[in-house]
Length: 431
Ligand SMILES: Cc1cc2nc3c(=O)[nH]c(=O)nc-3n(C[C@H](O)[C@H](O)[C@H](O)COP(=O)(O)OP(=O)(O)OC[C@H]3O[C@@H](n4cnc5c(N)ncnc54)[C@H](O)[C@@H]3O)c2cc1C
Image (tube, rainbow, N blue to C red; front, side):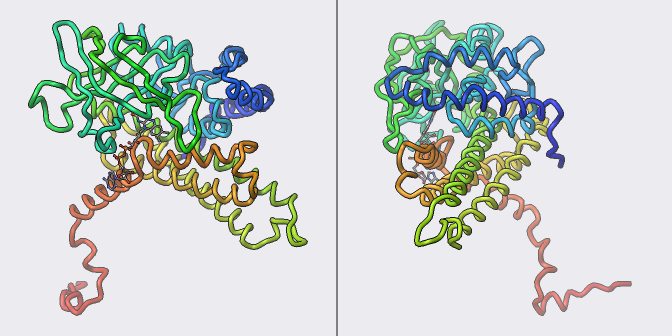
């Protein structure tokens, strides 16, 4: 395994950090003030996007971009540290056209869209002209098991007709959001087995019958881009709005999630690094009971444990990024060992974020729970990470199943490690 970053990635890393320092951080307070005043996206965002693009800091993800598509074509491994840097400032990714869920959606369109769909949707997404959302979860069924999904799609002549209700759909409240990628159940009875009954449909957000009901708060935090509830009532789109193959929505959703999870996890690691940095500086300057907070041994334990856990997590995520780059499985879902690794980093990152940020909040005292630091938001996001893209328990199940499958296939191979009388009787001759 080789985690060394290419010269291109090292150069981009330096330039990205410099750009963030020079242009984004000075606007951080203004970004929050603007959103607070109901002006979203803030007026300066398009200028920042244009500047980032001029400097080549654009579409930093997506290794398989064509020569005629804007972007850097970095490997997953090379993109990872850049996602970490952007993660420190949650609104930064949009400036570089690297926001979730658009990155995953662009990945999906890049793999499965027809030439006409690419022109209509992928091109403006790559240009940063529009935003998009991915609509899978539903209020009425346990959505951690996507075989439950109830939103239907049926063919009616040259049209597809969708009916259902989705919720927690990230990005829909963004004024530039124009596209929903909707995961639906195929309405005709008996079509396919459980994992071949769903299809993805490209639905323009302004299609009649699409109703955005509300933007749902997450632990009292209203994201300006939204985690929205949407009703689809007799929504009709042309049949050529089907993405990929009828009935193959499942495999496509898996394909979307691999690199997307690496991006999520690296952003998390960026937020954890910043939280640790903020907390250590705070404890070095604040005194209680005649000592700096940093002199208390429990505070030192928090700092050390956070450092160790962040470094462990980063290595694991880089390993998965590297493995994804090595994977030749295209375009179907990643092989089982890689799926288990991808599932593992999702659990590790969510746990990391809530633990590290919680320690940092405690070190800050009451201020850590206020909106004056990024910590409260980071904690909220970390808490959501335990659920979004599937709850921890489902990912643990994936890891465990892979482990058990391997154990089944080599059953008995560990017998020699026992020191029972039976082993003594089974002693083989050396010569
Ligand atoms: C901030 C945020 C953003 C989101 N963005 C999107 C988005 O853009 N698009 C989208 O489609 N969805 C999105 N979601 C929804 C998210 O993907 C779902 O919440 C998640 O998949 C879980 O589904 P559920 O809420 O229906 O929980 P349920 O399926 O009802 O599960 C509830 C609980 O049951 C337990 N459980 C479930 N399965 C197992 C198992 N196999 N073993 C043990 N325990 C289990 C878990 O503890 C789980 O938390 C978002 C959610 C949040 C919080």
